[in-house]
Image (tube, rainbow, N blue to C red; front, side, top):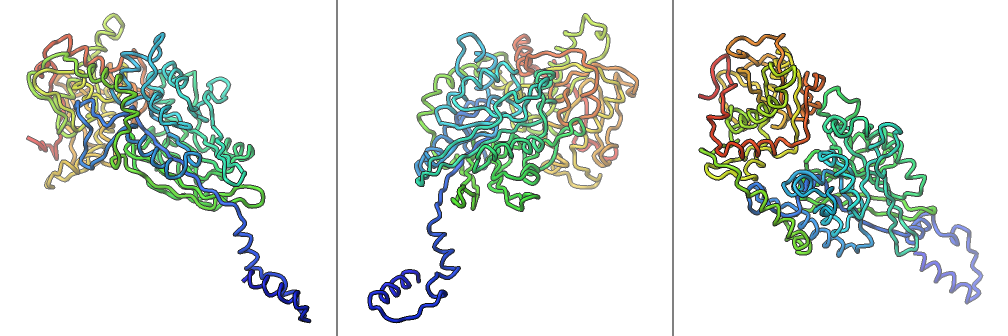
Length: 601
């Protein structure tokens, strides 16, 4: 239409035709003018890639099974796979039009990360460069947020890891305990060059989990504070906009569910990412972490602006890569996001990047050798296959080791005469210590977390309440109902690691009863438990600091604590014994019942 008008006007002027043209004919219509402006608007698209909860997975390798990683869903793991996906995206989009970020929990989770934190620590003089730093630097990350597990080995290890990175480690809500100023870099602003000569400024704000104050209390108390994500996002997002950020992305080590695992111990929400999107204006996208779930795309409407914020969480262990695609338009002297979407790419769809596998081949070989060290010999096979609903000797081993360590630690104190109870959780459903040679990897598969040991002073009444809370893990099942073990546990979506055995007492869990009234026949030394009796409670630091919100334990008096991992204590115990015989540690402390009748024979 506009071309036809220009042709018509030009012809009239040439012939001198006396045509009276009204203004309505000379001026383009409003629709045509809008169309013309739209054609002239500058457009630009870019992609932000994201990972989270890598937990030390560089290779598609299971150190506990000494074999390639496999699962029933056909997933693959490792930064070597992520690297291949990243290269493909960069080739498709143009590297200059992409960014790569992470949402935390990087340096804990596999024997590889344990080895370079404890066996050959990066903090040693002339120590090695952390394998995760090497891999992420080689892949070319632009930023990463702090995860809670970054603090598991102490602040010195974290700071050393940070110094080895070629990109910033972000944590706007990790603040100095005294000054309340950021202890880590809060944000980074990346500049993307467009073909139009108008740069796009992309701000990445890093937020971590307030639960660090509970879970790693021993390292951070009095040193760092961790305010809530909503509060800190509301503080920083306007600042980023005032600094000229065209796009604001949050990398948040916090799930999207709006739930917390710590009860009323903290005034903040653990899984706050969706709340942040809803309450804080000015955010375009959030890379979600911490929850270990898969969210290809979740749109959250901001209460104030009515605009959608796109959230995505790639599956943990480098099994997925998140892609956020942004379309921008230059209008009235600034870039505006006109659309944003997200999706996930599957690591199983590609091969390892040989650049990464070659880069870390030596470190990998060191760890494989380490975990295959033989430390003892088992007289029988021990397994966790039914440990979540039957008292399994393999979990008794953990409790025996913990009780022995605490008893020894307190033997010269005023608490030496008190009986020692111990808690342990069935962390894994697939761990097995086979009959015969026992290796470090066998024991590591039993205790997969880098927890340390704490001794607390508890009363009989507190132990009873603790057990009742733990028993909420079971689904209420009537006496006459068929028992399906696959549906018997995880009531209320409580994970296995938040169900505890307690050794040193004897009790039944009556699952026909409602939660809160399930602990029956609770005895100590053959007699009914005295609520006023005092006990030493051997407990891991996660639980001791309030992880799982078990009653009584977080506020109980601490008698002793250490920094050696429970996993290491188990290896030491087995090494000292030489022989792993259930006769030395197994005991039947509890059983499931329904109206007094055992569920399992």
